Amino acid sequence: MDPQLLSYYEAIERASADMLAAARAGNWDEVVKLEGACVLLISQLKHAAQAPEAPPVAADPQALEAAKVKSRIMQRILVNDAEIRHLAEPWLQDLDDTLAGRPHRSLH
Image 1 (cartoon, rainbow, N blue to C red):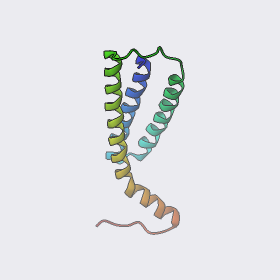
Image 2 (cartoon, rainbow, N blue to C red):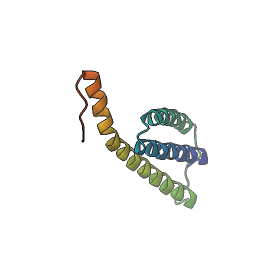
Image 3 (tube, rainbow, N blue to C red):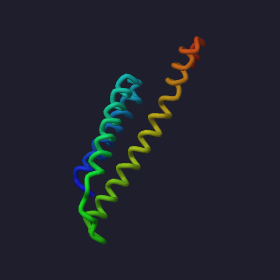
């Protein structure tokens, strides 16, 4: 795997971790801002991935390690995304209630 592509995955992972930290802090404006950064990084990754690469050499240790790193990064991004979605559910329900003119639920 091209090191540039791996750097995009790493940047997306960092943005994902930052989004999770913002979600845990209840800073939804920051989550939305970081989501926009992720969208841009994903677009850049897709563009970079379209560039022709040298054909992989069978059993190339560097290629195998890069694939493992990419897989671990993707798993962490998915875990972060799942937790962000879980944290966002009450916020999204409150937003839906506000837009529908329903009173907010109280946990007290």
